[in-house]
Image (tube, rainbow, N blue to C red; front, side, top):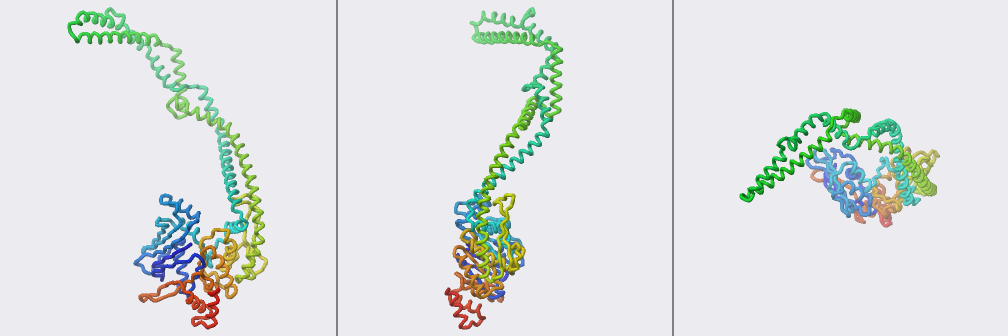
Length: 557
């Protein structure tokens, strides 16, 4: 609900504030008084593009602000949470303030609860809060989605459609996954022979972890085997087998020092260290001897290692790697791909079965929804055609066409189209193609009056939809609006007294001189002022006694 609209420096509006009621708000005024200017300003906070020419006073910016009550509107809360999650609270969205500013440089900015938003975001939010009907708009009535919503609302399909959409989503998801698996299978099959060749080559090589690095080290050792053995033999000779071996010399030194160990307190420590050195050298000599026995020049082993290393380097180059472990990783990856080829058929079969199950369930639900829709088509036609006659379109006819679509869509299996014939010609065409602006607006009014209890409609704003009607037809439009406003806010700009007489709150737009400039202003009317205003709408600036009595009757009713 639009609670308050504030307008500053917009065209000939200097400073204006309107407090709307929650029911039927009627706006009247002389032609040219500025009613359309107010709607133009309202359009700014609904996401319409700005125009710097509206800045009559170039020294200050234009500001239009709307305060909306949106308590209980889940879609509004979802929008605010998605677009400003950091500042969202549980009660965010109970009151929404939309502000649009046009700077003196012509640049426009928009804010929702003081958070900057772009025009697409503003359009998305405002469509949840306000439904603006202007005579020459391309209304949502011509859109297939709205037409479906009308039929489904009357059929009470909400729960079944929620179930259907979940099943449909599951079906689409599984189908997509299955298609991806089939595409992967085709790719796998293209690569399978090459992957198998590469894998077999690596498997046949049968490398172990770090093998090539160890092979390279062993080959270098064997290549220097003679020099290594010569150095080891010399070292062992000096330690154990020479005429005066080092191990034996240390043992003699220890024995010589033992005789004097009691004469100096530092000698025992030296003896202990010499003994340790003797033991360590003895151990080293044994280790040298062991190593020496394992170092042997072996031409056949060298040839074997060279062949192994040559194979390894060839595979390094082929796969663009530098270590044995990288080769083993590639081998594991190839094995996974080859296994995936074997596994993917089972996965595809599983997905196909799931898709068939979801499709059958979706088709069953779609048939149930379609049956409920068909049952509403004729009753809706009859009610709409009756209302059309009441609102001044006695020759107009609407027809609901529901065609079965062989392909399921996100809302079932039906293609729904509202067809229209304005002159009983028998030639029905889609509403969006043949209905005029005024016809569309009145048709929309009739439809929304029928589904008002079933659809959570936003604030409805009708801008001069009464063009071309008067008398009883205008009275019927007023009656329909009054009924519509019983459960939601309706704002209507009209020239018809029969409609104005149905107002819960009646606003009057007028021009006044302020500082030698013409300004547009607006004010709510008292009951007596309403009678006078409606009487003037009936018979002119100086209303007759009969017009006043008629106006009193309209206001009283």
